[in-house]
Length: 143
Length: 122
Image (tube, rainbow over all chains, first blue to last red; front, side, top):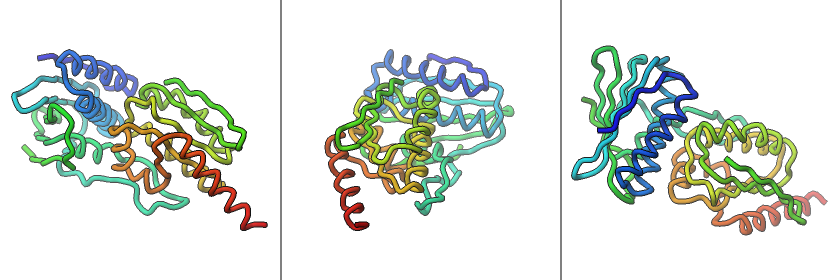
């Protein structure tokens, strides 16, 4: 199973995303699945570093008969995206607030999320379909 | 990410992006978008060659939208792929800015809207 450690820096988010895109290609995943996985990795990484102050993140990717999986482990502050309310633009107008969309995107681009906190780290497993899918949202199950 | 800016005879500023609009891509174009949002009257952002969009890319687009809305200027996005469009809709960006199939249609729509507004002022 391909797995790699990344330092907890904003700059490493781009490295993580490039690495996961390469591994998704090696696994022969469809372009929309690769898109979804790359997006989730970037959003999780930035959340862990900017808000959780993580020093390290470990990302793994593999496939099961019913789809692809990634495991994202970070040593930042406890954060369970399966129970965090999604956020999108509220009350569009001249003074609308920008930001905080990452969790919404992770929830909607993955099929299912499983979270647990163990050994001082956040452990999140995301599931993805193999190909194009039109579903609208993850069935989030806290571990 | 590459960013190519052109001006049409109708006064439309077209920005064609090429590449991944991720954290690295957003950092590359943030400054130029901020300048364009302060100066352009009609801005069409062509995303047809953008293969990936994450929340920091959306943030760049939303900052431009916020600036241009305050200035009374016009902004549209064109040519988004399925994945990119899904990101724009999930974040609510489509409630701020019109999404068009291609840059020509976006330019025509915004030019017509600007003319209509100008004629009302006269």
